[in-house]
Length: 259
Image (tube, rainbow, N blue to C red):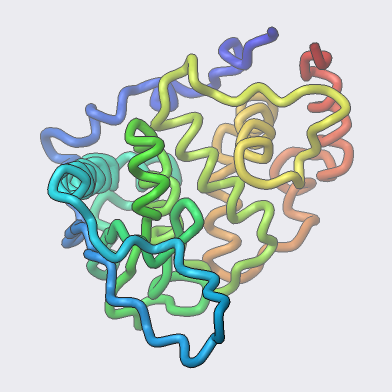
């Protein structure tokens, strides 16, 4: 399988996140984390002899509760330790401030993780962000700490609009997979299956390639345009000399063939 390792364009992209959690790079907003016990189910009324039940447990045993509380502490530490890494990746001032962030492990959310209360319309008026992590997912994937970096990146992004979605999510995963995660864990999209607009890991990989090939400041410049609500697709020509479609075609040709 071909590797993107040779594309590394700038020294700080390979620096461990721990480097930004020490010295003068340890400032972060107020970040708290906790496990939220399941709430009693609401009465469903007269359903006759049929009851669909609920996916939320009514009782969480002591061992599970302890695991989730430990994971909540870990998530909080990951967020605090890597806030400056996110700012560095987007070339934002280390003194940049965001509203307080609360990380909540909950059975009330059935996805993986989601952020609310900040960004994509909330802007500077936000009183705080809430990152919800599915308790079921957390228990099944206790080593997935990068999702916290992805969600905290959304809090930092705080764009006026969630548009274009593929780029917003791609930038968050670029920060996660190519700045936080270990090199060996990076995604490797395949020819015939990947496009620049696929979002998440795939778009993150495309951004990493374009950064190394054309413009080391590409992602910070895209982030600035999204923040100012001035993003237009023509910005790709301005920043790289090529259209997004041409970049996509060139990038696809560098990808490994499917197995």
